[in-house]
Image 1 (cartoon, one colour):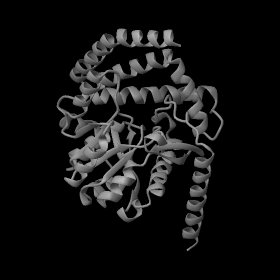
Image 2 (cartoon, rainbow, N blue to C red; image 1 turned 30 degrees about the horizontal axis):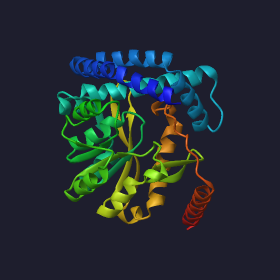
Image 3 (tube, rainbow, N blue to C red; image 1 turned 45 degrees about the vertical axis):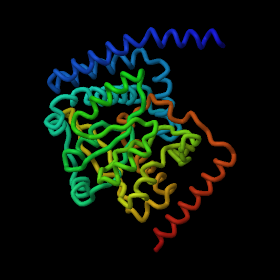
Length: 326
């Protein structure tokens, strides 16, 4: 076991310079390319990723079966969905690099906002914007920034500390504030109090030991961040759930999913569940736009957590049934 840990550390040290070279080349190359060539290069990278990412593909097909209700679509259809999921992920990363220069102009070229989201952005400042790793999640906060919102988002560590700082610099290029995930609470709270809006993603695993909350996602227990509901309740601001639909020309449209009033956000669990339910609805309709190769359902609740979640879900369904009968 000790020998294996040593080998892993050695591999990590050896990998660092190659990661730096790769990130630096990607940053420079994607930034100087015109948009259509940036998309072509991203598509080529996604093709290579699909060919060699054996573990990721296994997760992707497993997640696709869950999204589709327990059964995979026919082989060719399933492969097409997974390939497009890789393409969507590669294009999102490429977009982040591409908009590291001339950010405002490039975001305006690459994205648009639907009428409902436009109204919300105009009428509510600040607010908590929520999405998942579906469509181009990077452009959502960028578009909100273009429409007059001072935005603050969270970034997890990727690779080395230096690489994380470089990627954060790239994401800050348009003017939004990016804070590290570790210790983000104080910065986010201070940002909201100063009038900044938050851009948060909620579909990935956050262990209960790290503050995660169990919700139901595709009929399965899934621990996620309750930060959107918490900050909305604290700051008495609404939550808007949205996503960025990829368009045929390679651009994106920010589309409305759900709106939660500040008074409703005080129910932290129900608000968190509602955010995930809205995203689940979009993912079911557009599975190729979700990051399918993420090991999403890797954690299971203990008996007490499972029972508590079941009671919450049953209570929420009972309340929804009574409301619909009024």
